Image 1: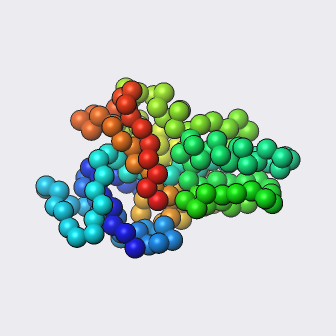
Image 2: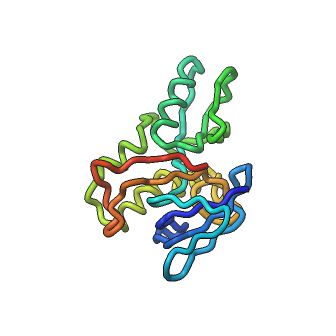
Length: 186
């Protein structure tokens, strides 16, 4: 088990929670979340990160033939996907340990696969409400449409969404800067 914290995190309702402490099982499931009131206080065993914790992005990969699926999964992971929905089972596909994959016959996204992080970064200057809605579009909304919510798609107790840290975000107004980057936490 590990405990992590950051300046903010994205709540399931799309608002930003301040100074969260997330306790996470070795499996990646969120055991508990609590927000510190007032000033941030250190505690034993807590890893503190500068930035904002958001749920891992979800990407659907429409599979016709399995020949290029590994390449497509790799691109999705680089783009911030921590959860992947394949529409067909493929053998001999290597999945990073921080990524979960399910096989489900559903169409929740178009066949145009995108680099989610590049899409989010291209919106620099959005106000904080729109940024949270954009992040939820690539996490919670897809989880709901694919039947994977509440296990995937939101940071809440009992979920296992995969966690990302948005670093070097302007924390005064939650805008993306040219230096903003993404880090995998869980």
